[in-house]
Image 1 (tube, rainbow, N blue to C red):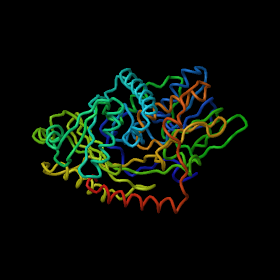
Image 2: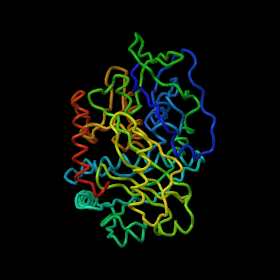
Image 3: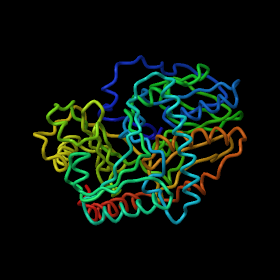
Image 4: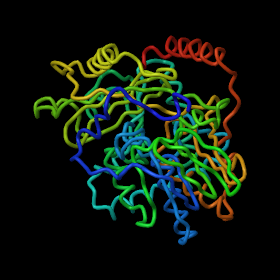
Length: 430
């Protein structure tokens, strides 16, 4: 077992703490056999299971997750559900490829919305759109590059100066921004609960069951858990950043930890100063910038900082998050958080994904690079298609293939150097 084969977070998800208590599925307590094992009950794993069951209804499918639905990585993000390519993915020089990506992403988004409606669970899923905003020159340059992409793609957007941003979001921190309608906002812990609730009854889901190791077997694969072995003909690894802890993608993946703080419900006088939009989300124009949200129930969330391969000191993180929030909203008397938590994101050097059949009967989808909800859903469905012989688009060509990274300690040294330089360049956005 590798110590990083599954997350062991220091703090609970603030999103999940806001939800009513749920009865979790049991953990695996004995050996079992099936046709397909899926490691990871996130957006990718759930989508893969649903699609697999549609294609091979008689197959027995087992999903295991190291945590509980809503408490793991899928319930720890900022809740941006994007219908189009991320800003870091957008390339106006390759519009044919980007159009194909956007069509696939939009189709996956429609499936998510359908499953949420069928679930009857309130995920606060709303097509509010999203803001991208810049405070300094480096951020403005990046913002203009994304604007060029949107314009070339024929996608609607709105340019916003500082005064318009103050009116819409209540912050004069940014000098320039743009608004794109192609984004939903959601309560991510509720969202993953809604999607998990739509798993077919034939799919067995075991929570609090981390995969410790796996190995090939004469008839397929064996997955080792704490209290039992799972034997299956095929195996999907869909635990993103922690795939490398199981020996997959060690030279292509890193786990980056980001941190979020969410306030209690704010008073009506304060909420009136936070812009005309009932809820909003701001994505940073710089890769190390801060993400912010105003939720439909009247809270503020700030997400920032990157930690390499391990969680940081939360006493320091909380104070820094508070500082960032007050910098953007000085009208707040104070910035007290109801919850502060972290989550790991699977990053690759070039932004491409580790995806496909890596060995006969062994499939993987990892390296979401911060775009895991819709793209992860899409990749899970397409992975099931590929494993069942269905013709699919060329994912490596469309979305990129994860490139090689140097081994440690050079990888860690490189991260520190690059992140230090980027923090200096984009300090106005942090």
